[in-house]
Length: 455
Ligand SMILES: Cc1cc2nc3c(=O)[nH]c(=O)nc-3n(C[C@H](O)[C@H](O)[C@H](O)COP(=O)(O)OP(=O)(O)OC[C@H]3O[C@@H](n4cnc5c(N)ncnc54)[C@H](O)[C@@H]3O)c2cc1C
Image (cartoon, rainbow, N blue to C red; front, side, top):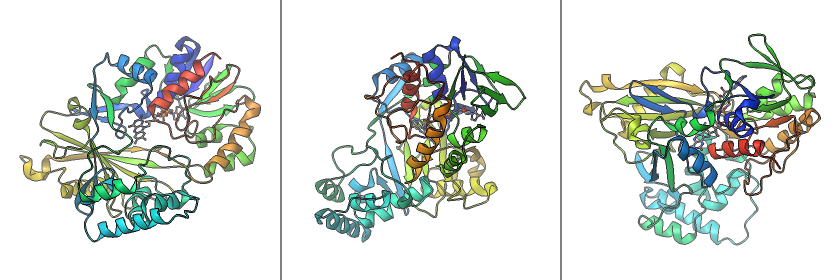
């Protein structure tokens, strides 16, 4: 029997690809799907933070499309930026015509000076990479500020290997043209996205869950890797032949007996952010065209904002708006206000931005409702120490049946080069937090496929 810890997308995909009849999933929550779980409340549909599929992988596209019976929406994505009281198209580095003066000129001069200086130092961290890519003035005003809000650390704490194609590295011509007028083409790495017409993002994962054997409300609290047993919070002990972990690595290591102190210490060094989702509704139409918006001002709590009815019109009551705001925090950046004041502060910010309009509501601000939802594990923070910590942890797990894989300490996985996971590996790590990777939903599906595949 393969026991799978956690019934999020990675756990479900492993079970689906190995064959549900061979697997048992243990899930702490009263529902499956983990981070792709969708909640509905008072006519609004909320995902756990904005979720859209931008995968180019045909297999995953097929799994998602089949799950919703082809009832999916596909559209060009609209992204905006809010900066000091004004809207800037995304990415800001190629839309500088909307950056106010004199900042615009300073950004361009600093960008050109950096690019024209031939001898460029190889960047040692994300802060240096940003300076080299965009010029220090723009880098420190926009992405460095956003990094502190989203990743909750200064950019010099971050390494470089997670960036991949995620950041637009503009040419001189693109920056100069974008400083005069809108560019005639999209320069963001995501151009088109897919989203289920009904049921929120979770609907894409429904096919993988059909027939899965899941024990809900079953929290795993202890693991004996030598005796191959797991212990649950209600005192049960289950034996496994093969164990697949999708729980966050620091929690997993904490639960395991038999591990050296170095592995525990390495696990404590791993960093992850948490997010508060503030969800506000109002009985007036959506005021902005964007699907989501980045907020650069560090004195504002709002970090990224999405309008749920923009993702699918079925996500909200007709003529209403549903705005979800991510506010990130971690041990490096505690929430800068009391939890009880979060909703009011964010609603005030959305009102200033014009996303919520008391004037358009029959009963003014009394019609605006807001609540919060906390997500303890949000984004793995890839610091310069992460790879070394993972090396220590994976090495400590090898004697218990973990088979090392290429790039298992790297944030990204190249699926075109990925190999099936050996069937004789007794311990397998899977998923965003289980592998401690920069995984999107397609990566989680593909990891499950690699575990199920025969070499
Ligand atoms: C804010 C946000 C926005 C995102 N946007 C996108 C997007 O637009 N597109 C995209 O493709 N991806 C997106 N992602 C990434 C995507 O959500 C994840 O990659 C994916 O859902 C991770 O799945 P997982 O199975 O690895 O982990 P999880 O979903 O975390 O699953 C782990 C499961 O383990 C359970 N569990 C935890 N502890 C225990 C325990 N002790 N005992 C038993 N069960 C336990 C949890 O309840 C959970 O169900 C986003 C993520 C976040 C946080």
